[in-house]
Length: 401
Image 1 (spheres, rainbow, N blue to C red):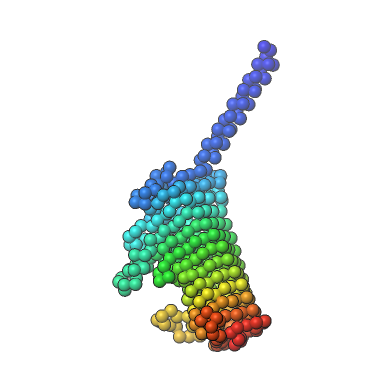
Image 2 (image 1 turned 90 degrees about the horizontal axis):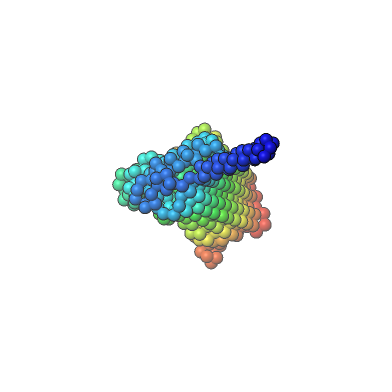
């Protein structure tokens, strides 16, 4: 064999070896970007504390320079308070959850922590499937008994983060709020199921504050508080195809908690259904001085079924009338549209606008509103205080604007 032939074979062997080595490295890299919490020590028995295994899995995925997937297989995983910190070396971490992640049964473990599962400073994360069980019933019972109890923990919080996608996640029996979006941009929640007892205290389904570009779609929420609550500093919020009940409705506010407060604007609530809720579409603010505001709000295509207060603006908000400020609300509410709102009110006053004397509501628009009382048996009433606006088309009860 000539030297040229030998050289050619050697070169070919080197090339094949080199390709094989690269393929092997790629395979290692790909496998290194897939993490299973059980492989890193979590136990699907619902008894063994798997907190460190979950945090350790996050650290590995967060440290990966390529997209990473975290798998939570079937089973029950006991996880205590856990923080998942960024920023990460990649912006595509995907949680695939098939099992149930459960909080400790003893509410004192998380009771004063404030948050059970906290994601902060992350960019590019998705969570798909799974159940989060906050085991909050014992704490609710403690609070109902009048005993001294811890405040409780919110189930899951996303804070100072961006590009978040959550789909088909179920949150059960939170001690406090279920899901909080705080200081985030570009968040999408889809196909969510959020459930707690109708008498569970402060178990808001989804709370959004100081965030922009949040979308909540195709979800079912039933709690002891607001199905969705919209806090100060929320802009460009889109809520569509949400079924609410039991609960306190979809609420903007309460606003005006602080003197210096960011406003709420560009909120759309579309195709919502309310069944047996305390409120339907609500805006609420405390009766005190504030720089806060709510403007450019669209409530469109809503169905009410036996709802206590289907349409309400309450600028003298003070739950249980305890320690009420007793001042005029400084929050300015303007450009609020109610379009195609139909159904039944459980109380005679189906539309109530109780606005601020010093900052009257302005630019309220009612269009194609038909609400009746006592399952269509009686006409409902409307009440307006310091509210200005216009009515278009069929509006029942008759507009008081």
